[in-house]
Image 1 (cartoon, rainbow, N blue to C red):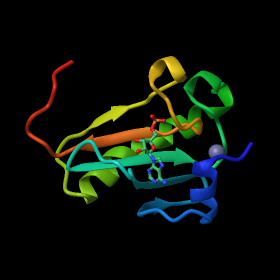
Image 2 (image 1 turned 90 degrees about the horizontal axis):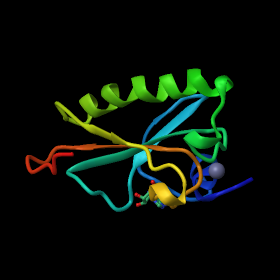
Image 3 (image 1 turned 180 degrees about the vertical axis):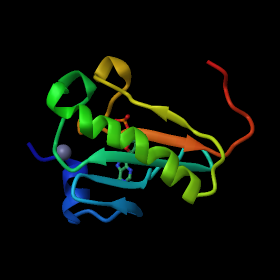
Image 4 (image 1 turned 90 degrees about the vertical axis):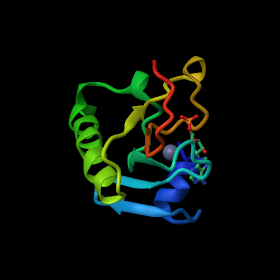
Amino acid sequence: MRCIFCEIIEGTISSKKIFENDELIAFHDIKPIDKVHFLITPKKHIENLIACSETDKETIANMLLLAPKLAKELGLNGFRIMINSGAEGGQEVFHMHFHVYGGSSKLVKI
Ligand code: AMP
Ligand code: ZN
């Protein structure tokens, strides 16, 4: 399975990369919904949280732990994480990613 995020990971499609290691990559969202909005995604093609299993739990933990580090580097004192999962969850790109965004003072409370 190969998708648009796989192509970003391979470098075939360019992105504004923030972070990369053997397991994960982070890049700015092309259509930001806040002052800062980036995506953290595993290099391994996993569709979404629904498709995750026990073997992915370290990756998920590493994705969550990376969020505050990168947010801080990008000048955020706080942020939100959104994980759209499945078509009914608003997911459009079926390669798991965590949206990390913040920076605006006008937040819709949920
Ligand atoms: P989702 O609806 O959770 O699947 O989110 C997919 C996100 O990927 C959207 O916020 C898009 O703006 C973003 N996106 C799509 N293509 C690119 C791209 N080439 N570079 C960066 N972000 C992208
Ligand atoms: Zn993919």
